[in-house]
Length: 325
Image 1 (cartoon, rainbow, N blue to C red):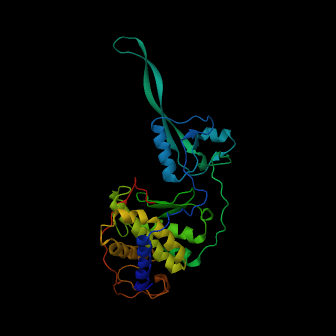
Image 2 (cartoon, rainbow, N blue to C red):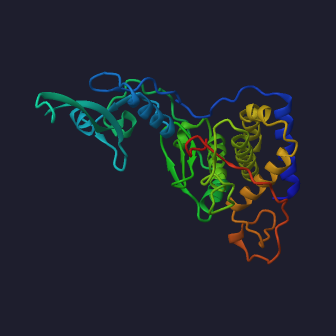
Image 3 (cartoon, one colour):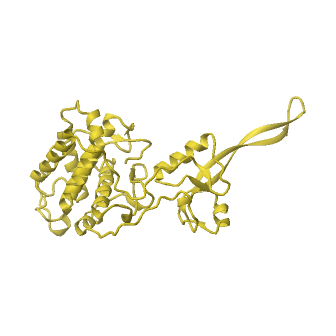
């Protein structure tokens, strides 16, 4: 892709951001926030630290259901936990009868115990009371987009499921909903490219510090990384011919971040440079390799010449707790 196209895409993003856009609307169908964590079988709400433990897990994993149950409870309801699913811990205090060493009197001592539960969406064969309703979209893969994803060298693990998209730096894993949960194929690939862009920030790739020094949610550095990811997604979508819808959504999504970091006059230039490097990295273009327009490095022999790119300023990684949205 020519550098002029990068500049054109960047200019359109800046124009929409500065001109004001409608609030971003998620392209993921049936997406909702889980309510207060509760046990599916007993209906009892969890209390204390369990509220935070389960609610945070639901947020990071993209669970829409607020219902949880044990492995046994899932079997008793005629279902089962999906293979490979990981449990979450619930803690409680249990009174332990013992004898006071000094007085010899019988006393009860509170002992912290725990058991393991699974979200209802981690199970099969179980009706979920608060499952969001949606009609799966018809998904038709975009050839060029599929090729970009398939040929990403040393790529992170890509998992599908739930209703939330994010990148986890420590395990180097991208998670996105199933393609049919998006409004259309363009929205799916734009979201996937956004998360793959975050993966290029890993220390094993372009090293923007995402796995070593994650930036707090909402901080300027967090906003910079989001801007890089959105521009990268726009560049890659441009390669696939799905540019218009991506630019509109990206600009709206970044409006809030732009307001917070608008004082940095070099932001757009450095972010665009970092995004170009990220898009090139995903496409397999490395320093010292040139690729003709329309060609992929796997399609032809490379030439030993430096890729002409502007050297970006380091954009620190983002949180919270290692999850990049």
